[in-house]
Length: 354
Image (cartoon, rainbow, N blue to C red; front, side):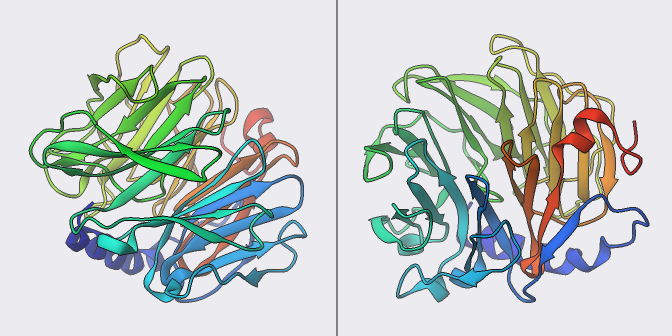
C-alpha cells in the first residue's frame, strides 16, 4: 500500500467510524477507549496479557485481562510510526511491525511479553512499505510489503524474529499490491506453507509450500479493479480450508464479491451469496466457525465462510483469538478494545443470530 493510499485509508476509516454504533443488542464487551488513536494490531499471551498497537506509535498493554492498561514506549520516533501487525511466537517472543513509507516501516522484538522492545529491522528502501507478517512454529516467518521492481517484497525471518533478510518474491501484476489494514494479508500453515492476499489490479491468493522459494497463484474472485478494493485479510485452518475477506474501503457498504472461501488447500476459491460489507480482518475459531471484523461491524460464519451473519455494529479493525480464556480480543478506532466470546459463536447465543 503506497503512502497516499495509506493516508487515504486512515482518513476514510476515521470518517466512517462514527456511523456504525446503532445496534440495540451488542455481543461485544468494550474494555477500553482512547479517543484519537486508531488501533490496528492486537495480540494475546497466556491468560492475562493483552496488547494492542496503532497510530501515533501507541502500544497498549494489559497484564490483568484488560482490567487496566498502560502505554508502552517502543521507539524514540514512535509518534511517527503506525503499528499494523503484532505477532506472538511459539517461544514467547513478540514481533511488532510498523507500516509506512521508507524508514517508517520497521520491526521490533520483545522477549518479556511486550514490556520492553528492541528494534531488529528498519526499511531503507525509499519505496518500501510493510504490509504484514506471519510465522511458522520453528520461529521462521515471512513479511510482505509493497512490490518493488514488479516483485512482491519479502523478508524472511529466522531465530524467532531476531534476524531478517530480503528474499526474492513472486511476480506481481502492474498495479497489484497488498493492504496493511490489519497485518493479516499473509498467513502461514504447517511448517513451510504460506498464503498471501493481494488487491487493486488483482485479488489473488499467492501460495508457497517451501517457505517462499516458489509460488502458485489462484484467483479469489473478490472485488478488484481500483486502488481501494481487493482482499484485505486471509485466514487458513489447519485442514487447509481458507477464507478471504475485503471489498472496497472507499465504498464500504458495497456487500457483494467481498469474500471468498476454499474447502481444502487444493480447492479453487469460491464466492458466496451472503451480503457482507467491507471487512479488514478474519479469523478461524474452529474448522467451521469464522469471525470477521471491520468498520462496518462484526460478522460470523458457522459454515467455514460460505455464509455470514451480522452480529454487531461495533467498528473494529483487528482481532486475536485466545482459546485458553475463550475470548476474542478486538481493537479499533478511538483506542477501542473489546471482547467477544467464541463460545457464543460455536454454541449459539440469544444475542447472536442462528
